[in-house]
Image 1: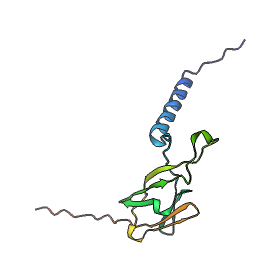
Image 2: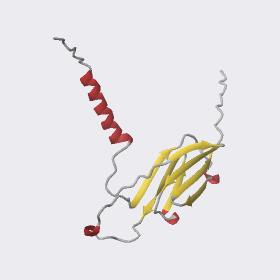
Image 3: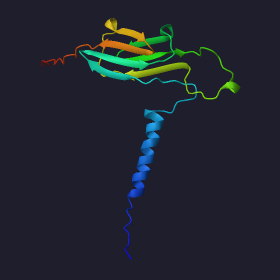
Image 4: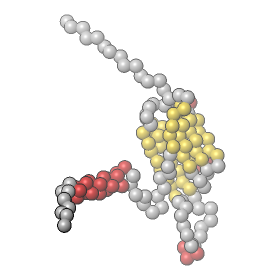
Length: 144
């Protein structure tokens, strides 16, 4: 008969994993409220620009607003029902409708005056020119 050694830390690992999941779901990626839409974003750097792609199928360009404040990008608007369907007639409802909003901190400051936005086939594409990094200036202290 062989005896199996018990690892007292295995239970702590599962507790840590559970707490990590709880923190992740609560603060980093909060669960969506019914009716709330937080569109996904792809952000990458290309030739001195930040390129942001946001899929917004069903949205109309006039219902989308993009704003940049400092290094914070916000995209919000509304996706409206084309035709209202009575609840008792619904077999499956997976499409999201209603107001949406998404804000992200950009990895650098951008020149919002030269920013470009296009919307084609349900995809919002932003091209944000990056500003040059600010040079650190050292100030010499003169003793008196």
